[in-house]
Amino acid sequence: MLDMLSHRMGRKFDAHHILREKDPEHVAGNLFNVALEFAVLGHIDTSTELYELAEAFSSDCKRSWSPGLYFAWEAVGKWPESIPAKDRSPEALEKLETERIVWKRQSVNKEEEMSALIKRATKGKMDEWGEVQIQGDDLTAAIDLAMFWGFEDKAMEILQIFADNFHSSWDQLPKSRKVWKLLSEKNLSKLIGIDENKMDNFRKEVMETFRERLEKGARRIFKDLPMKDLVQLCNDNTIKNAIWEDMGVDGDDPPTTILRKGATPEQIEALEKKIENTLPDEFKEFLSITNGMESVWNGVFGEPKILGTEEIHIFDATEQQEQWIDSAVKIPFVTTMSVKVEWPPMNRVVQINEGDEESKFLWLIEPEYGNEIGVRFFKAFGQLPPDEREQIQKLLGYFHAGKDANTKLGWQVGVWAPSTLDLITHHSWREYLELLAGDTANQDVYDEEDDEGRLTHSHEIFAYTLR
Image 1 (spheres, rainbow, N blue to C red):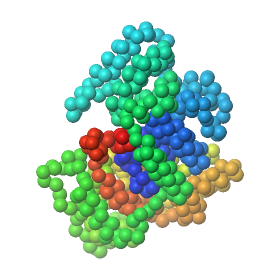
Image 2: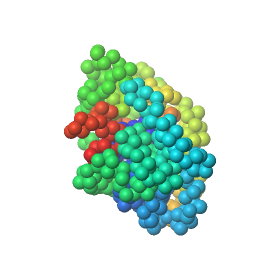
Image 3: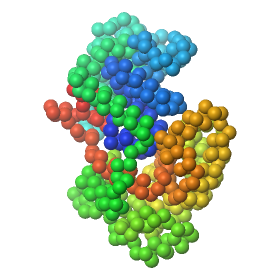
């Protein structure tokens, strides 16, 4: 159950990004993804430590876990105390296995079928760079069969193929329950050439980063930076770091700025009359510095343009709201509560970007709606059992500023990405812009090399950076 890539995903592990990430579920999803790679490399104790850290924060975070962790704990015979005996039983573990792999064990001829699987898996299609793409699912079925039939030498040969193609096949390998005997003995780590000293230092950084984020909440590293400097940072980092071709811009003729001439007081006043509400001071300050903004680099691709005073408009988001309710996307970003919250209809938001169904919507949400959300949420909150109420209270402290700060809400910023089902709210325009400014500092990671000129593929894995 690996976490889907969010619209803000960059490197697999990026301390700067994790410490600023606002949504605890995105943090948890990233944590379990990192924990699984530690386990695959044979560092199962570290995976367990990460698992227990996330569980102490919120047991609901386990929705992001991978069955591979259960197979890892089975292989070493060491389970987190919180996992009940019934979930460790052979019957329970069998239910977590991939049907295709189980079927292969039961239905194919030994070495003949295994050889065919290996041939099929390593005869993949060429990608756009001319490299052969390994078929990880076939290769996983082959190594599972080798272990099932006791051909451990053959399994080690297949594991070498995984080691050589770890960046494109790593997420398939943990699905084999049989292969964990080899993984738990650090065989894959040895084949990749992991430096254990680098691994130890990295482990400490990972633990410290996730512990700080979960215990102290999201960090606002630019909270004291003046608005003008914050806007300039978005501009300068975009000009410096953007991959223009990925943003639909001619790389031979890139822009020199993404900023525009500031809005006049009259333009801002006309906008307020159009939306029939007084905009927050920080957003008006932003408009006075740049009346909208061209596409901002976010470390992965370009953000939709931010609209100017003439283009900003009222938007009926009820259809969007129905979409995320149907998809069970949570508005307040705390664990799912046993008492259902009846959310007010979002039929009036202020759209401030060029977003659409294929990218993301950026809305200013008026205080009237935010306060109604608070009233309805805390009405349900008051009906919760004491232990659940205590857990939600703790999460409010970690994620927001606590219950008191959430009962009276001003203008908020809503970010809705339909393609990834990501819905995030920010307490202010300033808070959102700080996050965006931090993302613009992310440079392209797809072509990074280590000291020996080997690609690190650090957007997908961290193993290659530890050789």
